[in-house]
Amino acid sequence: MAQEEAIKLFEDIKMRIFFDDEQEQWYICIIDVIQALTDSKDAAQYIKRMRQRDKELNSVWGTICTPHQFKASDGKLHAVNCATLQNTLRIIQSVPSKKAEPFKQWLAQVGAERM
Image (cartoon, rainbow, N blue to C red; front, top):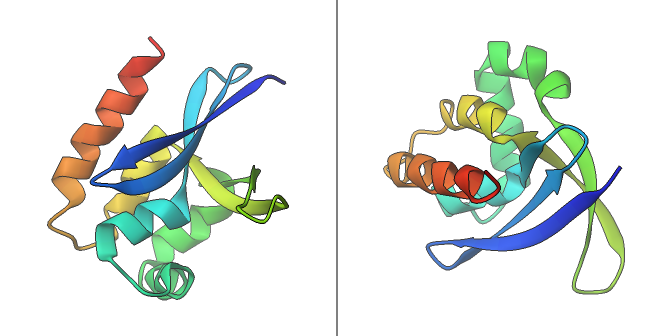
């Protein structure tokens, strides 16, 4: 399965993404999305609390998130949860943020790049 990885910027925040040729879809790192939308010091904890608050989202989390390994600055591969652009929009619904609308527009731009 061929996958094209890239770093895209949203308001100077690095967003790890990859394109899955087999699925013909972009995937984006969810922890990066939460970091961009919330400015949280601990995005992983934010996700944990978000999933506790949104039972419906929590019930489909394993279905809408796909683990993907990205190379970290230390050169090692680290698995992170990623989601398609469509599923990322579902996750964004659970994040109260004034950055949500600009982020959705940015996602549409990212999605259009491969077309």
